[in-house]
Image (cartoon, rainbow, N blue to C red; front, side, top):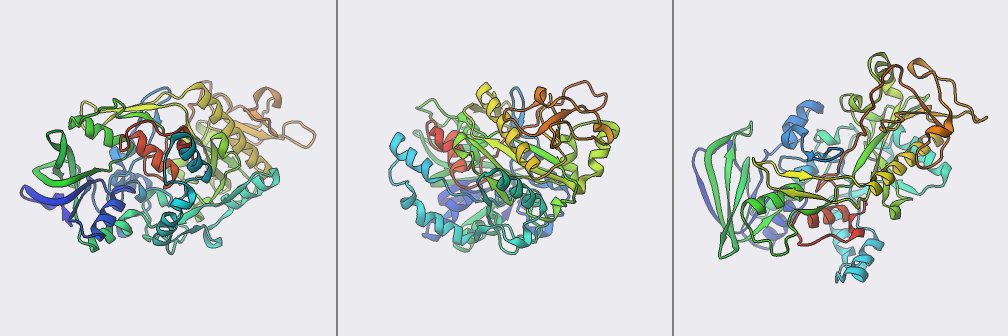
Length: 496
């Protein structure tokens, strides 16, 4: 391995294949080709970190592992954050280890509606099984399945909604709850502890802290890449990496791949490069219970409700540390302080949708891509229904109140058996009539005011990053990002 921060001269290399990006796409390509005897050069902009570097401190780890210190996103109304990893392993280093197969009905639609051959479930089954075996993918076991998940499962079961424990790629997970900030035990089988080491063992060469800014072309054909080495603070050192190769694989994800192709003036005969970006908009819904939840003592994503997947709605666990939860909870001053004081009793799940809205990625004036995305009315309605379903499940699990993330009704309170608002407490003691403030799906709740705060709270949204999970969403974003020319089939853009 060559650490760009320590390189004191220009480096020129030859290879059969140069792979740009070490995330879920690039790491697998590098390993598979190296294992077949190809001379592979793998180039990564970030550093190589492991469990000994991961402290679990959200702010410090976001600075260390996230691109732009966690400030990447899509511009629009609203602006939507899209977290990306910048390290060996890419975003797999900072995800929750969730691994879904592409659903059978999605694969069938690809074949029947779009003519995709040899990609039905029987065709892909051996590949799914091989990857799952290599990454030790299995449903979350009892040891790391805590109250946040079990309470939500109880609510879903009471309503008859189908759900399941989430399959994850881990070996020896202790349930420390900091998956999004790097696994301190290296139990999560992200690319930096699985496919990248296997690629290196097979003979691949890894160059870290090297920012590729140009694909070399000859007669319209890619023949290599040029990158700039950077120090530990991301500043260019003045030295370059130049790799000439027979084949170039650009695996930078949906946001960075099209921008690199555009800056390098790679031909775009379809005119679709950077278009059709789909991000699975998501929002976190919180809930307050009478009992302790202690959601940090379990896997953050351990259970999902897939009952509404064919509607394009998917609900799964999403518990975060206090520093990440506080900004999205409602209230100011004493009202907000009282909610945070009950953190041990808070539950949290994410509601996300398969979006019909489409964004675009273009090369920006600087190094960062310009990403734009406008959430359409139909998707906003679908997201509101997803939030409503999540709230309904929480109340079925006997939550006292739900924090919806919707600015017009941020706090929802449970109704009593006689249909009247339940007695409030603290800053939320005054209830409103239930019928006027329900979300898209009727449920046993009513909206509660937050004291004297008059300005509306924003809708808290987040997009799913390009390699955040395996399965159909990964393939769809690869299509959206330019790795496959054209628009991904609608059903490919599912949330599982």
